[in-house]
Image 1 (tube, rainbow, N blue to C red):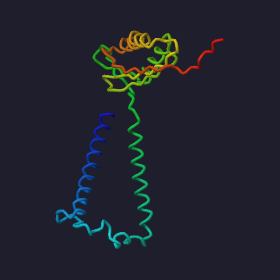
Image 2 (tube, rainbow, N blue to C red):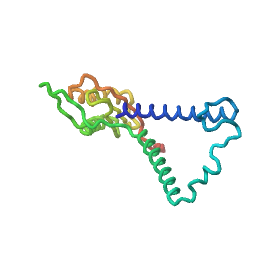
Image 3 (cartoon, rainbow, N blue to C red):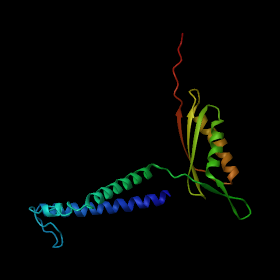
Image 4 (spheres, one colour):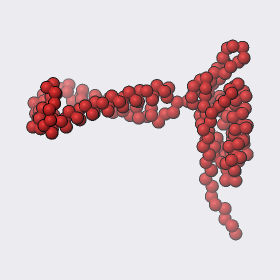
Length: 195
């Protein structure tokens, strides 16, 4: 999903950029009275983008304003959808696990995330853990966010995460590697008063 999204983003941004450069360059060339192709609608600095007749052509038609408003509304909705898709991170729905008999078993991604979260939360000094699986079904990756208690050592928490929770996940799924991005954060707490 993320690879497809990246390709679509690149194509859309490339097309938008190309159209803006061509259109803006043509309008700028006409405004500076430079030579423009004969098919270009504006040929000199005295030309206007839309003549008065063009601006008022459809004004008296009853269908004109609803169509314009609907088209602009659809354009805004598509732009908002595209923006929201940028912030949504794709999570793996399932992971393929080698069962040893030549067939692959399917493990639900949420189940593996839940087990990893439970193992990570059970560590000493971890107040809360959140896990998200990304990547491909055959090569998953994990993003782990740990909230550490004030007394916890980040180095110890990270080492325990690698040797316990992630090691259990690799062993149970039969994966040789499980690349992980870990983010550690301390739990907010109030300062203790000394009397």
